[in-house]
Length: 338
Image 1 (spheres, one colour):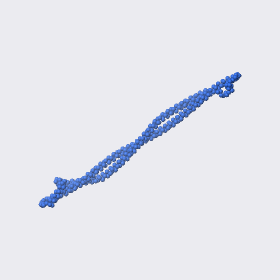
Image 2: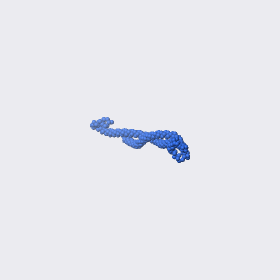
Image 3: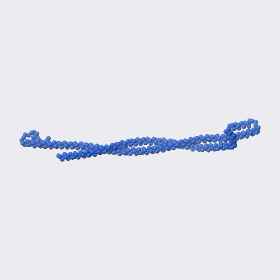
Image 4: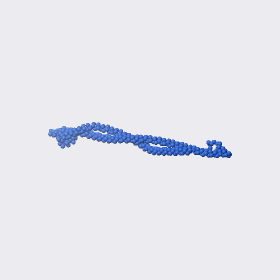
C-alpha cells in the first residue's frame, strides 16, 4: 500500500513537471507567434499602403500620359497645318518670284531707255530743252499758236520761213518729249508693278519666316512633349514594377500569416487537449484518492469489527449473555463490517 502511494506521487509529480514544461514551450511558441504576427501585420499594412499609393500614382501617370498624348496630337496637327501653309507660300513665292525678276529686268531696261533719251536730249539741248520737257502743255500751245499764225496771218516770206522753222523745231521737240514721256510713263507703270510685287514678295518672305519660326517652335515643343511622354512611360513602368513587387511581398506575408494562424490554431488545439487531459488527470487523481480513503476506512472498520467480534466470541465462550449487536457481530456478514 505504501509503495503504491509513493509510485502514484512520483507519477503525479512527473506528469505535473512534464505538463509544466509543455505549457512553457506552448507559451513560448505562442509569444513568438504573437510577436511575428504583429510584425507581419505592420508589414502588411505598410505593403497595402504602398500598393494603394502605387496604384493611385499609376492612375495619375496614365492621366498625364493621356494629356501629353493629346497635346502631341494637337501639336502635330498644328505643325502639319503650318507645313501646308508654308508649302503654299513657297509655291506662291516660286510663282511670284519669276514675275518679280521679269519686272525687275523690264524696269532696268525702261530706266535705261529713259536715261538714254535724257542723255540724247541733254547732249542736243540745252537747259532750255530740259526746262521745256517739264512744260509740255505750254510747248504744245506754242506749236498750235505758230500753226495758226502761219495759217491766218499775212506774213512775209522771211517771217513765214522763220515760223515754219520754229514750227519744225517745236514739232521735233514735242515728238522727242512725247517719246520721253511715253517711256517715262512706261517706266512708272513698270515701277509701280515692281513696287507692288516687291511688297508682295516681302510679305511672302515675312510669312515664310513667320511660319518657319512657328514650325521651329512647334518642333521644340514636340520634342519636349515626346521626351516628357517617354519619361512618364518609364516612371509608370517603374511604379508598376514596384506595385507588383509589393503585391508579391503581400502574397508572401499573407502566406506567413496563414501559417501563423494555422500554428496558433494547432497551439490552441494542443492547449485545449492539455487542459482536457489535465482535467481528466485531476479527476482520475481525485477518484484514486477517494478510493484510497475508502480502502483506509474499510480496513480500519474491518480491524475494529474483528476486535469487537473477538471480544464477543470470548464473552460467548465464557457463557455471558450477548447483546443483539454482539450476536450480529458473531453471526453477521464478515465481509460487510460497516
